[in-house]
Amino acid sequence: MMTMIVISLFAVVYAVSLPQISSFLGNVVYSTSQSSQQVQTYVVVEAVSLNGAKMGIYVYNAGLVPAEISAVFVNGVRFNQTVTLGIDSTACIQVSLPTSLKPPYQILVFTQEGFTTGVTWP
Image (spheres, rainbow, N blue to C red):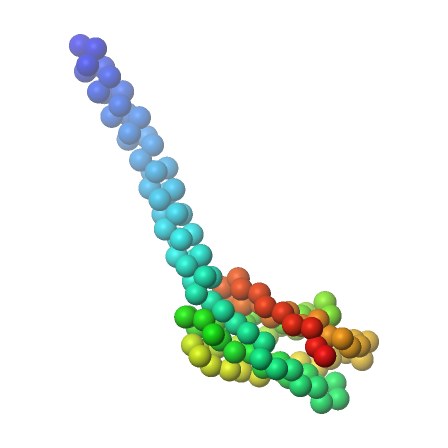
C-alpha cells in the first residue's frame, strides 16, 4: 500500500512539474543557439576616412556568420545604421559628424548579434 502511495505521489509531482521542465529546456536551447551565433560573429573596423564632416567607417566581417550592424557611436554620439555584412565582406558606413565632435574620435560599432568592436582614430 505504501508503494502505491509513493508511486502515485511521484506521478502527480512529475505531471505538475513537466511544463516547467519543458520551458526550462526550451530556454536553454534558445540561449545556447544565441550564444553560439555571438561566438561566431567577429567584425573589424578596417579603416576610417574623413572628408569634411563626412566620416566613412570601413567594417569587415571576419566571422563565420553574416553580421548586422545595428548602431555606430562616435565620441558617444549614436548613429543608427543598419548594414548587413555577408561572410568575408566589407562595407562602408557613412556618418555625418556634428561640428561639436573633435578628434581623437572614439568609434564603437555594435552588431545585432551582440558583438562590439571599437577603435580610436587618428
